[in-house]
Amino acid sequence: MQAKGEALPLENESVCAVFLLFTLCFVNDPAAVLPEAKRVLKQYGALIAGIINKESPWGSLYERKKTEGHPLYRHARFYRVDKVEKLITDAGLSMETYSSALCLPPSSMAHDEIAYDRFAQDAGFVCMRARKL
Figure 1 (cartoon, rainbow, N blue to C red):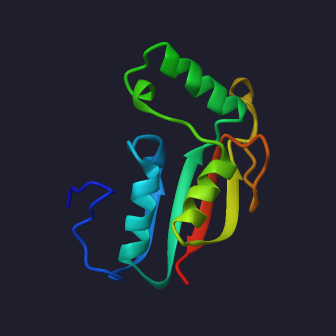
Figure 2 (cartoon, one colour; figure 1 turned 120 degrees about the horizontal axis):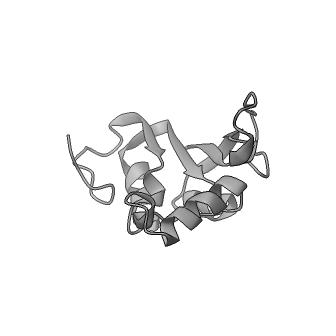
């Protein structure tokens, strides 16, 4: 199925989970996508949103690629974690937890990567889980 996040062709409360992995970076209006995700979630269903953290070294790298006209990243908008959390809660979903990865700067990727079951300040990738109560 192919659809726009702002108008999902799904029944109300018809799915257990909605995954928005990097999606919010590429939609025109994330504030319209999130209420639509809530609409299709069953009660206690989960929203999983993964973003590139704008305030991380990785976010800076991708912002630079965007300004240089990279064919993919030139279409992206990168967000701070607190901004996405506010969009999620404004949509009526309850934030539960975070996971973080890409905690080393891009130049350090030859080393082993560490992932955290929390929000790590400099993490390049942050995954958030919210629930429809």
